[in-house]
Length: 79
Image (cartoon, rainbow, N blue to C red; front, side, top):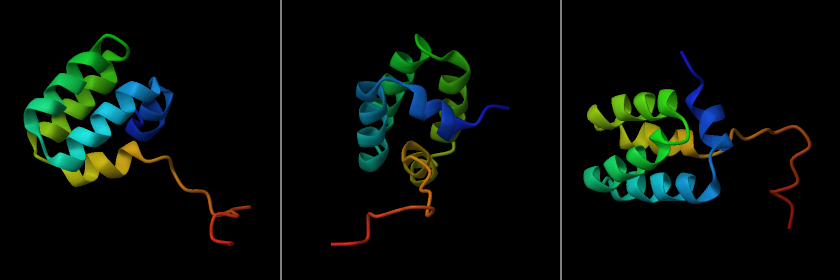
């Protein structure tokens, strides 16, 4: 079993953005197209995403497209 989040972070940014937008819109056709594009780069990842998409798990898919947030040394909250 692959770590979907880790594998997504290795994808070219354009592919990640395409998948993120498709998941945000809950657009099945757009997700399918993104999966097709990901297949050429990482087939095991594409298959794992396809499983989520076939279960209509768009929210989970969207969460996985975000990098894991490390709270250690984070300065994001400071003005």
